[in-house]
Every structure is written in C-alpha cells, then in structure tokens.
Image 1 (cartoon, rainbow, N blue to C red):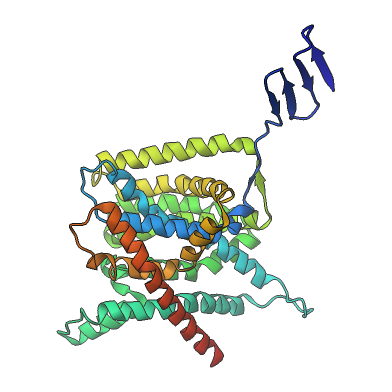
Image 2 (tube, rainbow, N blue to C red):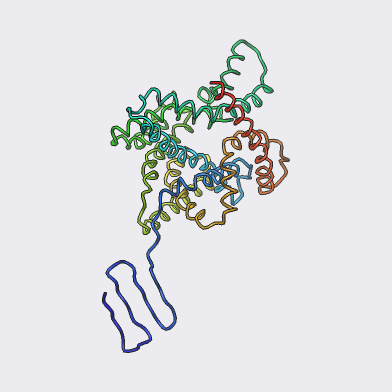
Length: 379
C-alpha cells in the first residue's frame, strides 16, 4: 500500500494494489468504485419476469395508434417482445438438451441415443403448445369457416393443426405458433451439432446473410420472401441457444462492460425508433430486426439489473404474467382487443386489454394443463 498525505491533515489519498481505492476528505468519502460484474445467470433467474415484460411489449405493439403520434415509433417496436421470447426460449432449450444428454444418476450406461432424445424433446415442447393452440385455433377458425370446395376443409384442418396458411400465404394471425414449432424441429439438430463441433456456433451469421439473400436476390425472394418475418427471427433464437452454455455455467461479464451495453442499447434503440417514426413502410423490415438482435440482448441484461432491485411483489407479478405468456399471446389480440371500443385512447385500451387478458389466459392455461395431464397419464 502507498499513502500520500498533504500537510493539510484534513485529506489524504490511500492507494491499494487492487483496483479498489478509498478517497477521504473532510467532507465526503468514496469507497470501492468498482462496478458489479454482469451475471449471465440472471437471464435464467429472471426468465419469468422477462417473459412477462416481453408479453406487455407485444400488447403495446398490437394496440392501435395514429401514425402522427409521437409515441408511434416506440410503440411499433413492441414486437421486440417476440425476439425476447425467442432468445429466452433458445437459452431454455439448451438447458433442457444438456440435461437430457447427461446419463441418469441411477444408471451407469451411456446417454440415450439422439433419436430417442429428439422424440422426447419434441413431445415435451409440443405438449406445452398444442392443447392451448388447438383450442384457440378451433375457436378462431371454425366460426369463420365458409366451405366452398373439398379443399376448403383441407385448408381448415391445415390452419388448425399447423397454421399452414402462414407458410403458404404469410397469414399472420397466429404466426408465432407455426414459427416456434418449426424452430423446435430444428433446435435439437443445431444443439447436437454445436455440442460436437463448437465452430458451428457461427451459423447465426450465416442466417443473417440468408436474410439479405431473401430480401434482395430475386429468385429467392419470389420463392420464400413472403415468410421474411420467420427468417429474420431465426438468428436471435439460435444466438439464444449459443448463450445457453454461458448462462448455465454462470459466466460473468466485467462490470465495466455496462458502458458498451448502454452504447449498443442506445444506438439500436435510437435507430429503430427513428426508422419507425420517420420512415415507416420505406425500408425492409429485416433491417430493423437485425437491429433488434443487439437491442434484445442488451434490453434483457438491463432488465435483469432492474428486476434485481425491484420488490418481490413486483417481480412476482411479472413472473405470473410470464407464466401465461403463450396463452396471453393467443388470446389478447383476437379475443380481447378486437372487442374493445375503437374510440378509446391508447393507454386505457392497453390497460383494459391486459386486465381482461390475464384471467382468460389463466383459464386457458388451466384447461391446457388439465388436457396435457390426461394425455400423459394415458400415454
């Protein structure tokens, strides 16, 4: 330790061989100015709260607002809730896959073969989605069904089971459901690939390149450009899988990295708000969704610091809403928002939508859980 003292005994400096320092004066004291490290494990710790926040963002996005409103640009960015869902889902899937790969404690044999783990993985994922999805899809599509030919019946079955009009015609009514089911089909293949060959963690960069090809290479655009909303969400999902291992190992980031996080957050947020507020409809949407990649990750890291400081009741509220995120997504737009008076202003509409969605989502969640239990008990 090195000490420097002035003739004026009212102040002195004390230097330690570590990065912490103490500065004393007759008026104030600074102690330990080091910024706390960023714990990636908090992504898993606050996953429920983050899912709840993401669902609120999506409802904010779906509530109508005039184009000339000053809040329009920020409101248009509410669809980043989908990116947050996908990122957190990717991390959660990695946890599940690593757990399934480890041999059971009571067994001494090798882990189960890939094909068996793949089937078990899909069974768990689809049992979480399908009961709620089939109920809501039937409730939405059957009353609107007007049969004209035999193909009309096939179209109805396709919409209820896999929402195939999304893939065929970019029908966006419940687009997240077929998109996440397709990603579930691919995820185990990707996770096993990067487990065996980590270099393939760079594949999300290839996915970004693919988005560029889909947008501007005419033959590709004509073939699959109608599902751009799916292609441009793939990178953030697989980046989430990539970050799963760092989250599982409780990796930390140097606390001084918060300044880089704030810079990335500010740049991506400002760019996205500017594009939506001043150039809405004048740019390819995948450009904004590429900006959403750093914005999603930095938003999650910053929200973690918020939830670390908020009271338990606040976190529990977000966590409860997050546990109903699938059901709330299915219900809030076509079964709540569509029935609210269009003359209401933005914030009352949003608040009433949330209040009405929560009990309906809870009932759907209980119904889906009951159905899943009956299916698994008889399996």
